Image (cartoon, rainbow, N blue to C red; front, side):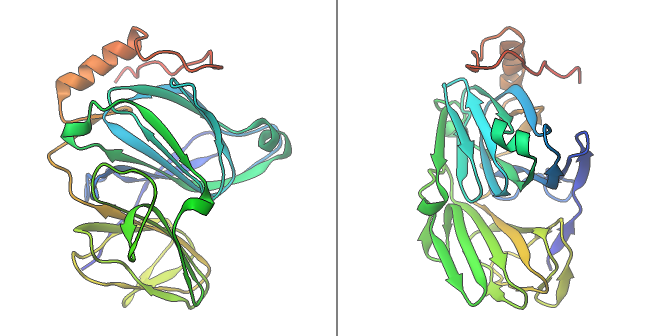
Length: 286
């Protein structure tokens, strides 16, 4: 039977983020160890997102937006905007630092922002991979349209299609947009799956699904999703992790000792500089 998870809400100065994973009910879903729902939010002129440079190891970050734009910079020298329907996949591997900010034109005019940011734990054999960044424009993603449904294969494989985004383990990550009364069956070819409803009211089989909830799905069951109102959702999961992971701040690793080393490396400036940035986020005290 599907199991719901109510995200924890964090208010970042008038901008809400809902964290659905990790949770008591699920420390991970497939390779996903972190699921954050950003917004929906409307920023007044001269306001926006300012995430100062911060480090990661042992994971890949995945950003997907329905509305708004973000400007990404990292220690590899990447400087790039992401817009609705694009995919930013950043492989941290042995270590990378990056920042995310509202682009100047969006900030000046005022704007809306709505999307998901997730972390994918790398397999143990790839935890120390070379850091890399890949941007995939919306037009490069496989799309499936039928009777009021739009499905976009963001990463991995689903519905007989495979995303061009390079993944390290079998992955399920599908953006779903449904018009009212549209129905689809949820791909059931992956061992671990969850559905996050960002916006709108839906029905999963015989159960109502409110917005801003994560629902853990039954293994192998082709659940049927129907939209009661215009719906935005993400189907995610894939191959289970190849062992437990430790999460501390922005670090993910199968080794506690590796996380301690990452703390020292950030405190002592060994992650490198993010070109164009002078700020950084210090290590948390706890």
